[in-house]
Image 1 (cartoon, rainbow, N blue to C red):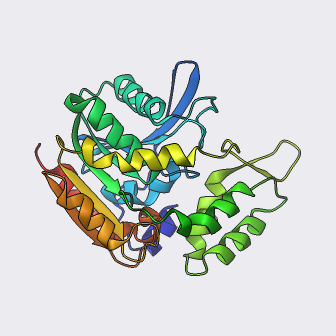
Image 2: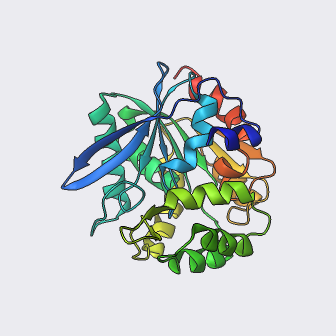
Image 3: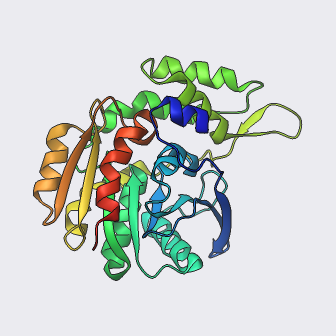
Length: 285
């Protein structure tokens, strides 16, 4: 992890691994990583089909600037599966994480699905959220551009060797950083008792219509919180015009475009994302 982060240009001051945290809400076990720190508490929420490990490189670079907590949304990573993946339910899990850790007020960073969840928290609990970062999500996302990735994810199943999945992922996105893809796949799968690897995530497909409807509600949810919208410079999911329209509708909004990054900004160019996040997340409310 640290070698790959350094290769991606991330300056690392403390290479120690994070501490795992476990708690539960409404009978669903939940999981995350506590990277420590004494600054303002920041909860980081991953996108659909990813895990809290997607923030590893960013957390290594931001360590010391804030108290960083990367969460696994239910149905992902080390968190339990559920029959309820509504945005409101995921948001309530985030509030429960803040309560579990003793945080009265937090700063939220959410990528894609995680950004939708973070915005819901900010809207429902404005007194709990000081600042909000949305990464590559806004009304006007090009859902059709994700079909190849969605098809790839829906086809994930047990494999004998992880390299099989890495090869398939590189065929979907030949421009991806191969070592980063290999690391991501190692976090999305777990060893099976009988050998081989199986996906950690719930294989049931997300409710995409509900997620897209929630994305369309974002402008109405972002009027009471300072917002930083980050777009990947080569993202096909979020057009530049759509990002600019959202920021224009937010009373206290900023837009940063991270170069040489697609939808997964935090993995494609973590060093530039860290540069964008640090001043915003450490700013006084």
